[in-house]
Every structure is written in C-alpha cells, then in structure tokens.
Image 1 (cartoon, rainbow, N blue to C red):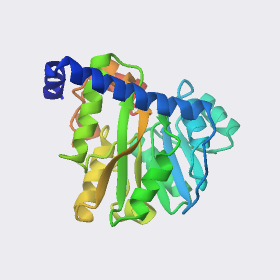
Image 2: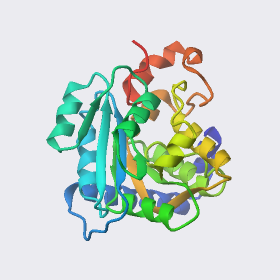
Image 3: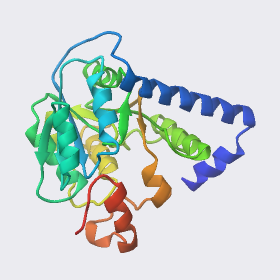
Image 4: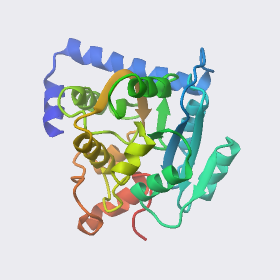
Length: 275
C-alpha cells in the first residue's frame, strides 16, 4: 500500500484531477441513494444482505436507507449485533431483522447472520457503507449471468483526505487486474451453497476475514470470482484514520494480533473482539 501511495503522489496533475473527479462522482451516486427512490425496480432470486454490527448507530441508518432504495426488489436484511441496543433499535425502525449475538467477532457475526437468513444469494456488507441504487442488481446479474460463484465491486471512500481517496480507489481498481480473489467485506456476493461449502467466514481471524473468504472461494471453485466496476459501494475511512494503511496480514490469529492495535480494532472494525 505504501507503493500505491508513492505512485499516487507521482502521478501527473491531470491524472490526479481525473481520479478525484471520478471518486467524487461515484460517492455522489451512492449518496443520492439515501435521498432518492430508485428509478425502476427489478426482481430475481431472494437476496439476503448480512451486516455485522457493533455500536454502529452513527452509520447504519445511511446503509439501511440505501438498501431500501435499491433497484433490486427481492431483498431481506439481517443485522447481527453484539452489545448494541441503540443499533438494534435503528434496525427495527427500518423493519429489518435483528440478531443479538452472544459474543464478539466479525466472522462470527457474519456466519450467524447467514444462518438466520433465507436467501439463495448472500451479500455481506459493513455498517458504514452506502450502496448505489443498482449495487445489488449488478452484483446479482454478474453472479447469475456468468459461470462465477462470487462477485464483488469497486469501493470508494467518502470522508478521508484526498490522497487517501485516490490511493484507496487505485488499490481497488487494480483488483480486477491483479487480485480479483481479494474480496472486500463491503460487498461480497455469493451463493448460499458456496458459503457453506467453504465453511463460512474463518472465526479465528481478527481482521481481513473478507480477503480470506474470497481466497478460499477462488481456490475451491477454480478462480470463479469476479470483480466488477459496473457499480460501487461508498465507505467511511474511519479504519484508515486510526490504523493507517498497514493492516495486519489476514493470516494472523486472534492470539497473535498486537494488543496495542486491538483497542482500535474494537472501536473501528465494526465489532468488539476482546473484552
């Protein structure tokens, strides 16, 4: 990621300006989903959107509003909350399903939410995300109309320094070329049978369980993972503001995770990991 920072800083001004405009346009398209109803509606197989949440009352309303305003019609939402009564109240106000879980962990929450869902297709996202009107529609179309078993899409930041927005954008655009198996937990779309065939999310991982998830799908299903730029998801930059860009490798187990970082992960990764 430091290399991407260096390359971004070395780009000509005209290229940087183009990237800034591109990022801002995508962010505005996501923000519009909060304010405006979808221009049309389509339907298809039932989609379950699962969301892990730990005290996400500052963010989750925008995500749920953007889900309400999707062009795709056949959606259920399951939010797995740990020790988050205010977040649970917000989810209930939207009429979505709340699952109160008994212990912390992003992977654990995701697995429990999938277990409580009923859709043929599962989309996992984070509580601080905002979808475009067509995010679910595009992810499902990419899944149903090809031979892939997992799709994910472009992510953009909406509340960071400009250079961080550019670095984040470039890192995600590069996935389509170099690392399409590194699925971002902000929008992973796959079939229910695929989720269970790989054993779900690895509950031993403290962070980057989403990358591990896509990597295992890639290996088991011979590379049938697709990254698309036909839609996007906007997300908060809160993790990077505190943790920086050098997140621990996803292979680290809970007991190996540096204690000094754990307090930040508790606050910023969406769920509390240790008490």
